[in-house]
Length: 341
Image (cartoon, rainbow, N blue to C red; front, side, top):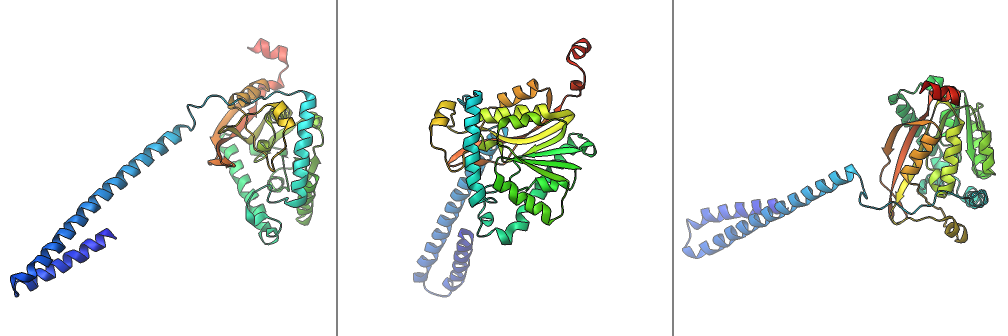
Protein backbone atom coordinates (compact mmCIF):
# COMPACT_ATOMS: atom_id res chain seq x y z
CA UNK A 1 0.00 0.00 0.00
CA UNK A 2 2.86 2.39 0.86
CA UNK A 3 4.60 1.54 -2.42
CA UNK A 4 1.47 2.39 -4.41
CA UNK A 5 1.14 5.73 -2.61
CA UNK A 6 4.78 6.57 -3.31
CA UNK A 7 4.35 5.70 -6.99
CA UNK A 8 1.21 7.84 -7.31
CA UNK A 9 2.87 10.83 -5.63
CA UNK A 10 6.00 10.50 -7.77
CA UNK A 11 3.93 10.42 -10.96
CA UNK A 12 1.98 13.47 -9.87
CA UNK A 13 5.19 15.32 -8.92
CA UNK A 14 6.70 14.61 -12.34
CA UNK A 15 3.56 15.78 -14.06
CA UNK A 16 3.56 19.00 -12.04
CA UNK A 17 7.22 19.68 -12.88
CA UNK A 18 6.33 19.66 -16.56
CA UNK A 19 3.46 22.08 -15.95
CA UNK A 20 5.65 24.26 -13.75
CA UNK A 21 7.93 25.06 -16.65
CA UNK A 22 5.14 26.85 -18.48
CA UNK A 23 3.52 28.70 -15.58
CA UNK A 24 4.58 31.19 -12.95
CA UNK A 25 6.76 30.43 -9.95
CA UNK A 26 3.64 30.40 -7.75
CA UNK A 27 2.90 26.76 -8.85
CA UNK A 28 6.26 25.42 -7.67
CA UNK A 29 5.64 25.16 -3.87
CA UNK A 30 2.94 22.38 -4.29
CA UNK A 31 5.48 20.32 -6.23
CA UNK A 32 8.02 20.68 -3.43
CA UNK A 33 5.45 19.59 -0.87
CA UNK A 34 4.65 16.47 -2.90
CA UNK A 35 8.33 15.63 -3.15
CA UNK A 36 8.74 16.03 0.61
CA UNK A 37 5.68 13.79 1.15
CA UNK A 38 7.22 11.21 -1.14
CA UNK A 39 10.49 11.33 0.77
CA UNK A 40 8.66 11.00 4.10
CA UNK A 41 6.81 7.94 2.79
CA UNK A 42 10.07 6.42 1.59
CA UNK A 43 11.58 6.85 5.06
CA UNK A 44 8.46 5.30 6.64
CA UNK A 45 8.62 2.39 4.22
CA UNK A 46 12.27 1.80 5.13
CA UNK A 47 11.41 1.90 8.84
CA UNK A 48 8.55 -0.59 8.44
CA UNK A 49 10.68 -2.95 6.35
CA UNK A 50 13.37 -2.96 9.04
CA UNK A 51 10.73 -3.64 11.68
CA UNK A 52 9.37 -6.51 9.60
CA UNK A 53 12.84 -7.98 9.19
CA UNK A 54 13.44 -7.74 12.94
CA UNK A 55 10.14 -9.53 13.63
CA UNK A 56 10.91 -12.26 11.12
CA UNK A 57 14.38 -12.72 12.58
CA UNK A 58 12.96 -12.98 16.10
CA UNK A 59 10.33 -15.48 14.98
CA UNK A 60 12.94 -17.63 13.26
CA UNK A 61 15.04 -17.66 16.40
CA UNK A 62 11.99 -18.70 18.45
CA UNK A 63 11.15 -21.48 16.00
CA UNK A 64 14.76 -22.62 16.09
CA UNK A 65 14.66 -22.85 19.87
CA UNK A 66 11.31 -24.67 19.79
CA UNK A 67 12.64 -27.15 17.25
CA UNK A 68 15.33 -28.15 19.73
CA UNK A 69 12.83 -28.65 22.54
CA UNK A 70 10.17 -26.77 24.45
CA UNK A 71 10.09 -26.15 28.18
CA UNK A 72 13.75 -27.12 28.51
CA UNK A 73 14.16 -25.26 31.78
CA UNK A 74 11.11 -26.80 33.43
CA UNK A 75 11.63 -29.01 36.44
CA UNK A 76 10.24 -32.53 36.38
CA UNK A 77 6.50 -32.47 36.86
CA UNK A 78 5.29 -33.74 40.21
CA UNK A 79 3.49 -36.79 38.84
CA UNK A 80 2.78 -39.74 41.07
CA UNK A 81 2.94 -42.86 38.86
CA UNK A 82 2.42 -45.60 41.46
CA UNK A 83 -0.87 -46.64 43.05
CA UNK A 84 -2.31 -49.47 45.10
CA UNK A 85 -4.57 -52.06 43.47
CA UNK A 86 -7.58 -50.50 45.22
CA UNK A 87 -6.65 -47.06 43.90
CA UNK A 88 -6.21 -48.44 40.39
CA UNK A 89 -9.63 -50.10 40.57
CA UNK A 90 -11.20 -46.83 41.70
CA UNK A 91 -9.47 -45.00 38.84
CA UNK A 92 -10.76 -47.51 36.29
CA UNK A 93 -14.29 -47.16 37.68
CA UNK A 94 -14.08 -43.38 37.29
CA UNK A 95 -12.71 -43.62 33.74
CA UNK A 96 -15.35 -46.18 32.77
CA UNK A 97 -18.16 -44.00 34.08
CA UNK A 98 -16.88 -40.99 32.13
CA UNK A 99 -16.56 -42.87 28.86
CA UNK A 100 -19.89 -44.59 29.33
CA UNK A 101 -21.44 -41.12 29.37
CA UNK A 102 -19.52 -40.17 26.24
CA UNK A 103 -20.69 -43.39 24.58
CA UNK A 104 -24.28 -42.47 25.30
CA UNK A 105 -24.06 -38.80 24.31
CA UNK A 106 -21.24 -38.24 21.83
CA UNK A 107 -19.50 -41.49 20.82
CA UNK A 108 -17.76 -40.08 17.74
CA UNK A 109 -16.95 -36.57 18.96
CA UNK A 110 -15.33 -38.07 22.08
CA UNK A 111 -12.84 -39.85 19.81
CA UNK A 112 -12.05 -36.84 17.60
CA UNK A 113 -13.29 -33.61 19.14
CA UNK A 114 -14.46 -31.85 15.99
CA UNK A 115 -17.91 -30.38 15.49
CA UNK A 116 -18.29 -32.47 12.33
CA UNK A 117 -18.44 -35.55 14.54
CA UNK A 118 -21.13 -34.40 16.95
CA UNK A 119 -24.24 -36.58 16.90
CA UNK A 120 -26.18 -33.92 15.01
CA UNK A 121 -23.56 -33.92 12.23
CA UNK A 122 -22.12 -37.43 12.19
CA UNK A 123 -24.46 -38.96 9.62
CA UNK A 124 -23.13 -36.82 6.79
CA UNK A 125 -19.54 -37.05 8.08
CA UNK A 126 -19.34 -40.71 9.07
CA UNK A 127 -17.28 -41.73 6.05
CA UNK A 128 -14.83 -38.89 6.67
CA UNK A 129 -14.52 -39.96 10.31
CA UNK A 130 -13.52 -43.50 9.42
CA UNK A 131 -11.34 -42.30 6.53
CA UNK A 132 -9.25 -40.44 9.11
CA UNK A 133 -8.58 -43.80 10.72
CA UNK A 134 -7.41 -45.20 7.41
CA UNK A 135 -4.98 -42.29 7.07
CA UNK A 136 -3.65 -42.89 10.59
CA UNK A 137 -3.07 -46.58 9.87
CA UNK A 138 -1.21 -45.72 6.65
CA UNK A 139 1.06 -43.48 8.73
CA UNK A 140 1.46 -46.31 11.23
CA UNK A 141 2.57 -48.78 8.56
CA UNK A 142 5.07 -46.24 7.25
CA UNK A 143 6.51 -45.95 10.76
CA UNK A 144 6.87 -49.72 11.00
CA UNK A 145 8.47 -49.93 7.55
CA UNK A 146 11.10 -47.27 8.18
CA UNK A 147 12.09 -49.15 11.34
CA UNK A 148 12.41 -52.44 9.43
CA UNK A 149 9.47 -54.12 11.15
CA UNK A 150 8.27 -57.17 9.22
CA UNK A 151 4.64 -56.16 8.73
CA UNK A 152 3.92 -59.42 6.90
CA UNK A 153 4.82 -61.27 10.09
CA UNK A 154 2.08 -59.57 12.11
CA UNK A 155 -0.67 -62.14 12.67
CA UNK A 156 -2.46 -60.77 15.72
CA UNK A 157 -2.91 -57.07 16.44
CA UNK A 158 -4.63 -55.07 19.17
CA UNK A 159 -6.16 -51.60 19.08
CA UNK A 160 -6.11 -50.50 22.72
CA UNK A 161 -8.77 -47.89 23.45
CA UNK A 162 -10.52 -48.73 20.20
CA UNK A 163 -13.57 -46.52 20.75
CA UNK A 164 -15.90 -46.87 17.76
CA UNK A 165 -13.30 -48.77 15.74
CA UNK A 166 -11.76 -45.86 13.84
CA UNK A 167 -8.35 -47.60 13.77
CA UNK A 168 -9.49 -51.16 14.48
CA UNK A 169 -11.23 -51.68 11.17
CA UNK A 170 -8.39 -50.42 8.91
CA UNK A 171 -6.08 -52.69 10.90
CA UNK A 172 -8.43 -55.62 10.25
CA UNK A 173 -8.09 -55.02 6.51
CA UNK A 174 -4.34 -55.63 6.82
CA UNK A 175 -3.81 -58.23 9.55
CA UNK A 176 -5.40 -61.68 10.00
CA UNK A 177 -6.72 -61.16 13.55
CA UNK A 178 -7.46 -57.84 15.25
CA UNK A 179 -8.93 -57.17 18.69
CA UNK A 180 -10.32 -53.84 19.83
CA UNK A 181 -10.29 -53.16 23.59
CA UNK A 182 -12.20 -50.36 25.28
CA UNK A 183 -13.87 -49.53 28.61
CA UNK A 184 -17.05 -48.20 26.95
CA UNK A 185 -19.68 -50.73 25.90
CA UNK A 186 -21.54 -48.10 23.84
CA UNK A 187 -18.45 -47.22 21.82
CA UNK A 188 -17.83 -50.90 21.15
CA UNK A 189 -21.45 -51.35 20.01
CA UNK A 190 -20.93 -48.70 17.33
CA UNK A 191 -17.67 -50.39 16.26
CA UNK A 192 -19.34 -53.80 15.99
CA UNK A 193 -22.20 -52.38 13.93
CA UNK A 194 -19.85 -50.60 11.52
CA UNK A 195 -17.76 -53.77 11.12
CA UNK A 196 -20.88 -55.84 10.45
CA UNK A 197 -22.18 -53.36 7.88
CA UNK A 198 -18.92 -53.75 5.98
CA UNK A 199 -18.73 -57.52 6.51
CA UNK A 200 -15.42 -57.34 8.36
CA UNK A 201 -15.25 -60.67 10.17
CA UNK A 202 -11.65 -60.98 11.40
CA UNK A 203 -12.14 -58.51 14.25
CA UNK A 204 -13.48 -58.91 17.76
CA UNK A 205 -14.02 -56.48 20.62
CA UNK A 206 -13.47 -56.75 24.37
CA UNK A 207 -14.93 -54.44 27.00
CA UNK A 208 -12.43 -53.83 29.77
CA UNK A 209 -14.31 -53.91 33.06
CA UNK A 210 -11.36 -54.65 35.36
CA UNK A 211 -7.65 -54.21 34.90
CA UNK A 212 -6.81 -57.83 35.63
CA UNK A 213 -8.32 -58.70 32.24
CA UNK A 214 -5.10 -57.38 30.74
CA UNK A 215 -3.27 -60.33 32.31
CA UNK A 216 -4.91 -62.62 29.76
CA UNK A 217 -3.29 -60.82 26.84
CA UNK A 218 -0.48 -62.94 25.39
CA UNK A 219 1.01 -63.73 22.02
CA UNK A 220 0.48 -60.29 20.48
CA UNK A 221 2.49 -59.21 17.44
CA UNK A 222 1.42 -55.56 17.26
CA UNK A 223 -0.38 -53.08 19.52
CA UNK A 224 -1.61 -49.64 18.49
CA UNK A 225 -2.94 -47.01 20.90
CA UNK A 226 -3.56 -43.40 19.85
CA UNK A 227 -5.43 -40.62 21.69
CA UNK A 228 -6.22 -43.00 24.54
CA UNK A 229 -3.67 -43.18 27.34
CA UNK A 230 -3.92 -39.44 28.04
CA UNK A 231 -7.46 -39.97 29.35
CA UNK A 232 -6.14 -42.23 32.11
CA UNK A 233 -4.42 -41.04 35.30
CA UNK A 234 -0.63 -41.61 35.34
CA UNK A 235 -0.66 -44.74 37.55
CA UNK A 236 -3.19 -46.30 35.18
CA UNK A 237 -1.08 -45.29 32.16
CA UNK A 238 1.95 -47.01 33.70
CA UNK A 239 -0.07 -50.10 34.65
CA UNK A 240 -1.62 -50.42 31.18
CA UNK A 241 1.68 -49.92 29.37
CA UNK A 242 3.38 -52.54 31.53
CA UNK A 243 0.66 -55.09 30.72
CA UNK A 244 0.69 -54.30 27.00
CA UNK A 245 4.46 -54.51 26.74
CA UNK A 246 4.50 -57.85 28.54
CA UNK A 247 1.81 -59.19 26.17
CA UNK A 248 4.05 -58.79 23.11
CA UNK A 249 5.65 -61.75 21.42
CA UNK A 250 9.45 -61.61 21.05
CA UNK A 251 9.97 -59.30 18.07
CA UNK A 252 6.47 -57.90 18.49
CA UNK A 253 6.04 -54.14 18.58
CA UNK A 254 3.84 -51.41 20.01
CA UNK A 255 3.16 -47.89 18.77
CA UNK A 256 1.46 -45.59 21.24
CA UNK A 257 1.05 -41.88 21.84
CA UNK A 258 1.02 -40.20 25.24
CA UNK A 259 1.64 -36.71 26.63
CA UNK A 260 4.82 -36.42 28.66
CA UNK A 261 4.36 -32.82 29.78
CA UNK A 262 1.41 -30.52 30.47
CA UNK A 263 2.30 -27.03 31.61
CA UNK A 264 1.44 -26.63 35.29
CA UNK A 265 0.26 -30.24 35.61
CA UNK A 266 0.57 -32.11 38.90
CA UNK A 267 -0.88 -35.45 39.99
CA UNK A 268 -1.38 -37.31 43.25
CA UNK A 269 -3.62 -40.32 43.72
CA UNK A 270 -5.27 -38.95 46.86
CA UNK A 271 -6.12 -35.60 45.27
CA UNK A 272 -7.36 -37.26 42.09
CA UNK A 273 -9.70 -39.70 43.79
CA UNK A 274 -11.09 -37.06 46.14
CA UNK A 275 -11.79 -34.49 43.41
CA UNK A 276 -14.68 -34.10 41.00
CA UNK A 277 -13.78 -35.40 37.53
CA UNK A 278 -13.62 -32.97 34.58
CA UNK A 279 -15.71 -33.63 31.51
CA UNK A 280 -12.72 -35.11 29.69
CA UNK A 281 -9.53 -35.49 31.67
CA UNK A 282 -6.07 -35.07 30.18
CA UNK A 283 -3.02 -36.55 31.85
CA UNK A 284 0.70 -36.92 31.27
CA UNK A 285 3.42 -39.29 32.37
CA UNK A 286 7.14 -38.48 32.51
CA UNK A 287 9.32 -39.80 29.69
CA UNK A 288 11.71 -41.36 32.20
CA UNK A 289 8.82 -43.58 33.39
CA UNK A 290 8.07 -44.64 29.82
CA UNK A 291 11.74 -45.50 29.23
CA UNK A 292 11.94 -47.38 32.53
CA UNK A 293 8.90 -49.48 31.57
CA UNK A 294 10.54 -50.36 28.25
CA UNK A 295 13.68 -51.57 30.04
CA UNK A 296 11.65 -53.48 32.63
CA UNK A 297 9.66 -55.32 29.97
CA UNK A 298 12.59 -56.11 27.69
CA UNK A 299 11.67 -53.72 24.90
CA UNK A 300 13.90 -51.67 22.63
CA UNK A 301 12.84 -48.12 21.77
CA UNK A 302 13.04 -47.75 18.01
CA UNK A 303 11.52 -44.31 17.50
CA UNK A 304 10.25 -41.33 19.47
CA UNK A 305 8.45 -38.62 17.55
CA UNK A 306 6.86 -35.45 18.85
CA UNK A 307 3.26 -35.02 17.80
CA UNK A 308 1.85 -31.70 16.59
CA UNK A 309 1.69 -29.02 19.28
CA UNK A 310 -1.46 -29.52 21.29
CA UNK A 311 -3.21 -28.05 24.28
CA UNK A 312 -4.91 -29.33 27.39
CA UNK A 313 -7.53 -26.68 27.93
CA UNK A 314 -5.48 -23.48 28.03
CA UNK A 315 -2.22 -25.26 28.97
CA UNK A 316 0.31 -26.23 26.28
CA UNK A 317 1.47 -29.83 26.38
CA UNK A 318 3.97 -32.10 24.68
CA UNK A 319 2.83 -35.46 23.32
CA UNK A 320 5.09 -38.10 21.79
CA UNK A 321 4.56 -41.32 19.89
CA UNK A 322 6.80 -44.21 20.93
CA UNK A 323 7.62 -47.26 18.83
CA UNK A 324 9.01 -50.16 20.86
CA UNK A 325 9.92 -53.72 19.96
CA UNK A 326 10.16 -56.71 22.28
CA UNK A 327 13.70 -58.03 22.48
CA UNK A 328 14.20 -61.33 20.66
CA UNK A 329 16.33 -62.48 23.61
CA UNK A 330 13.09 -62.92 25.54
CA UNK A 331 12.74 -66.17 23.57
CA UNK A 332 15.58 -67.50 25.70
CA UNK A 333 15.11 -68.48 29.32
CA UNK A 334 16.48 -66.09 31.94
CA UNK A 335 19.39 -68.34 33.09
CA UNK A 336 20.45 -68.99 29.49
CA UNK A 337 20.30 -65.27 28.73
CA UNK A 338 22.66 -64.60 31.63
CA UNK A 339 25.11 -67.20 30.28
CA UNK A 340 24.99 -65.55 26.84
CA UNK A 341 25.92 -62.22 28.43
